[in-house]
Picture: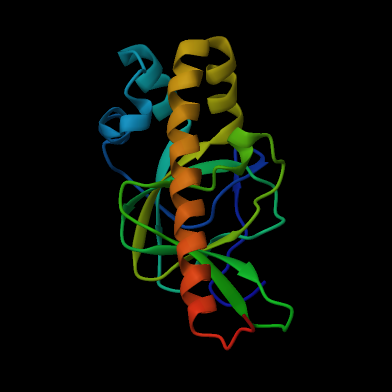
Length: 178
């Protein structure tokens, strides 16, 4: 295990590291736009398989290639998503995650493993939502599923536009043949 990384288990399944914190989880779920279509009963259900976790700066929330067990909302602090470079120890930052933003969305898109790594840039709190029960809710209630997946698509599209902008800025600084 690398520095700052912890192994952990929740209810016998792989889950997110970090220190669990007692907070009003129902309020966090209810207050997020993506979960706006949930009924009070569904908010309580999502809250029952969610927890708030704390991470220190530099701590890994999840790693690329590991089983995608949770979806996260950044409650407080700063997180960046990264991809490993070819040289050991080098990484490419894909995106900064802002407070209130969802990340670790791979399991909602059918991926069994995370497609990037998430690292806390500062002391951070996240809402960790177990992916499997959330997926089950989306399948049982298509209207809620459409609402949530529309929010997920918006997050991905926004990240895509940021990556394109960043690549264009890099290319503008390289001597290119025209």
